[in-house]
Amino acid sequence: TMGGAVSAGEDNDDLIDNLKEAYYIRSDLVERAFRAIDRADYYLDEYRDNAYKDLAWRHGNIHLSAPCIYSEVMEALDLHPGLSFLNLGSGTGYLSTMVGLILGPFGVNHGIELHADVIEYAYQKLDCFIKTSDSFDKFEFCEPSFVVGNCLEIPPESRQYDRVYCGAGVQKEHEDYMKNLLKVGGILVMPLEEKLTKITRTGPNSWETKKIISVSFAPLVLPKHSTNGKPKTVPLR
Image (cartoon, rainbow, N blue to C red; front, side, top):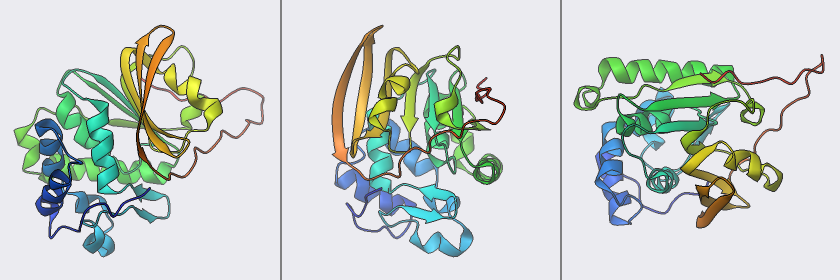
């Protein structure tokens, strides 16, 4: 994803100050969530020094988007307590954990991630946050749960969500599939045709679309066809 919109911070709070000043973070709720979680904690130790730059980071299958992108995503999701959230390509769990701080104890916080090693990493980071973070005690938390799978293989009878984010570029032919993951009144944020896009489901067959900013995301990985002819499905609880 793009980045470099704001200058690097000395530490997490300094980075958030820069994002606020540049108007990427615009609401108190989003600001509190960003301040509660140190971005550097989601980096491998030897790369922590880069955590407060407004840049994406990738190492093997582990990926973090740039802070300015996560800011836009968090603001566009228009989160509040008690909502259900689905993160497609949940990665390190950084975004899902911030979202969980806002959703509170009556929310639902699900993630789907293609790579089992990344899910393991995400659960390590989540465990560390719960056990060691001072912030954890200041919030009622909706703990994220992550499942391994391809987000294009969610069974059609699965639940719908109030909020959905996809962290990979969605091909035009999968746009309708993504829209149908939403409850009526729900919001979907995803990269579509090189634009971070916010789609609100206004009725059973109506959606409103708003383009937010230009982005460059790796495209969604398409499902591999299974050998026995049965489609694989993602077990969302």
